Image (cartoon, rainbow, N blue to C red):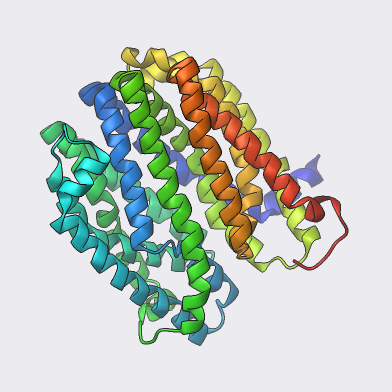
Length: 431
């Protein structure tokens, strides 16, 4: 028993997971406090509208940064000892993002009514939010590239401390703006917080001499433009199509069930996103650089099984606890008005188990630049989610949205097992 515990202590995944748990705990608390304030002061309608803005901001950030985050992390991890290659990677990313970001920021600022009608519909008038987003957008890109440098060098403690500081500052800004301006304040907080986080990131980067030298942007590499293009397409499909589908599902619930029911479904998404932060940050922080270095199928199989043995059981136990305490969780995190969302928990939690199991495997698409595998599986999964959601919502009401989440990730997991069957069940080989 003692030898097993010693092995766990030396396991890098356990070390990263333990430190990451602290960062996620802080982020989770700040997110939950924010959700509580939104639920009490803005209600289910405010929750639904804020969900739409969050989804579109995710898409805009990804389009503006060309979805390059994972590509930058991968190539920094591969060339961390080659300064010339690193500068080529980052210079290409800087210039590419600057051009796209400038165009997108101008579109947001000078044509806000288009975005307002797309996100909220004609009955709402929040043009000024998109004008503010256009001004803040360039700051998002710089922050993303700085975080990619830190992640690529596997400086996970610095990365997690940055997230902690950004979460705390973001919560303070959010609470102040909601208290003063209610719904409009919540919108401005969503737009401004990623830009404010850049201030903290820049301070840390400038105090890291090795990182500061890499902020030089002196040449574009067509080699990396070509390599980044596949990462951009992969990331942009997920970052634009998924939020668009979620907006369509949410608007379908509003039209067929009511705005409050859409708010209940959105509240379930927020709770899920908050506990899923642990796995998503861990995958980005640890797994992507690790898989980028792996060259053999046996190593890939062992890494996936390592995750399943160490991480997945913890989540299953946690999900069981969340399920049995769902009444208490809704009352504490939201309000009694949201108790109607309790039937969503079983479907959302079950789906998230398969989501975790799937993501651990699917990160191999990014690590090995498996472009067509990623594109085809993503389109199949997103299409399945949309049509399954519409069908089940018609049959079972807003609960059908979470039912579709479960069936989609069960389908996705089976699909991934079929694709990687040779790596899991065949002889060892180069990958």
